[in-house]
Image (tube, rainbow, N blue to C red; front, side, top):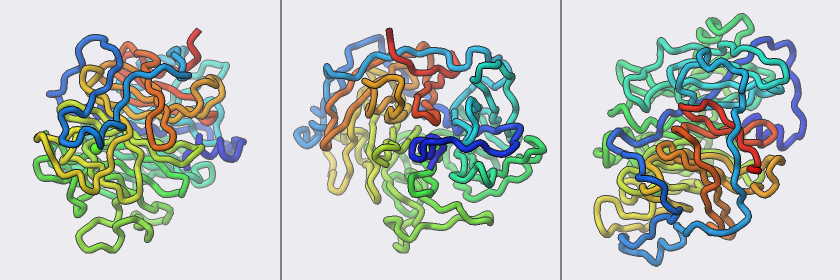
Length: 432
Ligand SMILES: [Ca+2]
């Protein structure tokens, strides 16, 4: 489980002994924005998510989209979270922020260019400190490439381990690695790398990049479909490749290897990779576990028309490239047999690339409790959504950031943050 979840579940934060410099782990995935051909939505329009009228089975899809609803989800305010931080010292592309386990007021901020910084929000201003710099190993040729993900080991306070996901060259691939935080400094930390998994990437876009420990202590890894447009080689529906899938692996060993949990849905099947937990994904750009329910919320970036939110089930096929959101993709009809429909989808009048967030479980904004908060990279819109009894019961825009929303973050108390390329890290607070 992650630090925030552990803190929520166990109530207290245990201070680690004498760890002087803290690292960060931010995992960032840069723009899940599908590709450069996707344009930002046209100007402000009411939040009226798409209907399924162009699909062959509109009735079956009706529950996946709802209109903006009146309800209790409140507007929010976006406040600079680290007002004393000199942004020139932390890179220019923040893509992930995580609280450092066991440390109050210390966060790991991931810059897509390949570095992680420790930043502080305590009462005494402190400069950022370098936690890890692997920029020499990280490929950043494409705008969706880079250091995209960071996850602290569930026992980080005791073993100093963390995991990072990044793009690399020769061949073009993504890399999942384990690092040991070294008190001697970031160079020693960088030299501790153990590569656990490498996946060749046929194109520079759709790299996924979210990594997160689940409540089960296993590491979940989001992979895109390999890129280009339309999933040209059908990776989303192909269970013999890791591309287009959400993986679930056991990284608790001590070697540069991982184990496939025996209860993974396709473990042992001849034509499937056992690492796969769910598939049929295009480019999952952020997913999270609701600490209260254990539900896995995932945002999958669309191509032509729709951005979608999924609740991930074991073994689920989320449709790409048969479907995009609630549409059939590239045709007016398709066979949806066995596909899991999204919880919700919105169309490109409202944005162009979804950025997944978190279910709010903090205490500062009581009316936001239990709402899934997410946004759009292109339009800066932020929404809240409630889901109950198998359907969306509330959905509304609650703020609009001035710039590109690259990620959301959750601290140890369950409070939420928004990362933007333009304004840095913003904290979500109650609106006046
Ligand atoms: Ca889908």
